[in-house]
Length: 130
Image (tube, rainbow, N blue to C red; front, side, top):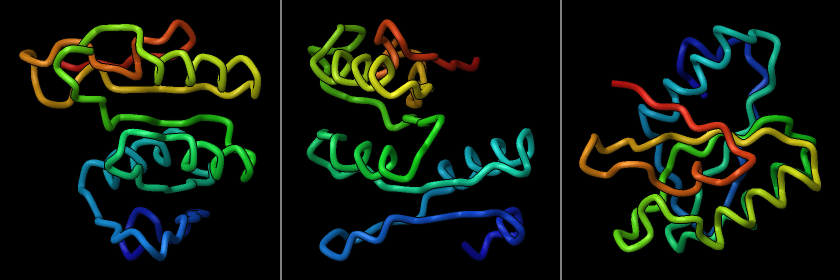
C-alpha cells in the first residue's frame, strides 16, 4: 500500500487474520502495470493460500464485484503441467457463470515448466513472455 504507484489508486486488500500474508514484487509489478493501462481501475488484492484451493479467494473477489481476475500464481504439480485439471474446470465455470475475465501466466519459472494450470482452461486468457 505504500508503493508510489498506489498512492492515488483505489486498492482493497483482503485481510486474512489466520494467514501471514507476504508482499511480493511480482504482485506489485503486475498491479502497477494494470494501473498504468487503466488508472481509474480498482485493485483488489488477495493472496492465495498454499493448499491450491482458490475458491475462498475467488469468492471474495466475486463478492466485491470484480471484473478481471489475474492468476499468475501457477499450479506446480508436475503430473498436471499442461493438463485440464479440476481447478481449470472450476475457473471455466466461474467465467461462464459470473461474466468475469481470468488472466493467468503461461509459466513464471521459465521454459522448463511449460504451460501451467490454471491458464490452460478453455475460457481463460494466457499471457506469456520470452
